[in-house]
Image 1: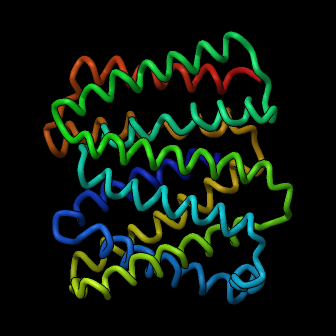
Image 2: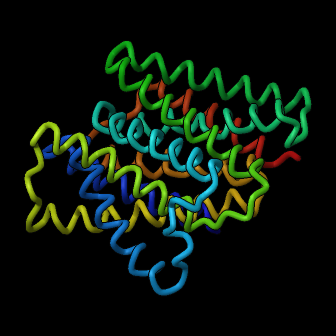
Length: 274
């Protein structure tokens, strides 16, 4: 349930970010989105969990996981700017495959020939999707895959850490790192128009959606098997493909359709096996 709600929040977030990227740079979007998110989270933690805000007391594992999440989101938003929403999110669907491979190699989850074949099917699906880059942005394809890889490493790290680190720590750390990173860039380039009116409202909603995505996603990975939970991340592939058709009149090609199908099938099989 936590991951399903996380994907709903993520889909809403991505749609809002796609529209905001028409008027703001990637760094500006990251800065304003996270300012709203961290203000809401701060107001909650200051009353119920002040310990999570003491970043200087967090373990190296928490900082590393947060840094990987930050990298994933920076690359992810850049990919959304370069690619149609459905394509960017479909490439991100390789995350469950990468997480499953890492989990099996580290002996955190069972290995079998059928699971290996399922992973290869997913890789084939990604290869087909990557062919779309020949007619679009190869850079966008690479950036989206990089976002997926960074998140997969972070997923496995959460499960292997063995620490009693709360979800709030990871969320607050990630938000803080993103604000520092994007804020430093915006200040250095002197390119931050202050949003007002509708953009201000959209940034606020996007910030809340992002906070919900990170918090609910981290909760789910801490309480359920990696392959089961991570496979649900593919739900936005369907939802955003429909959104692209309705809002932007962007229809998936046969190559994109087959590749997406292979990816979803692969992750669904991994989720159904132990």
